View (cartoon, rainbow, N blue to C red):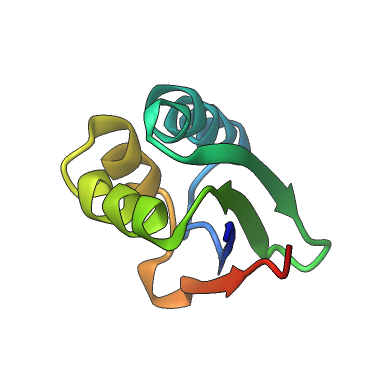
Length: 97
């Protein structure tokens, strides 16, 4: 069963959107898509300044392993420094198919 991971957040104070979008693209291409089970990832921005990243993983263990590995990855660490950590919420949903 696949897993849909939904992360919502706001940018850290003073972070330029272009700088974040560059870091987000690098996190996606250098880290996420190199991980086992990463099927699709997309980023969106709400009109109120909230951001959303949706990642489709092949399985829950794939998502969990990626989250653990992200702590030691340069691209993901850079991404995290641009996000307001207190605003981050992560939820996972099991697909029904």
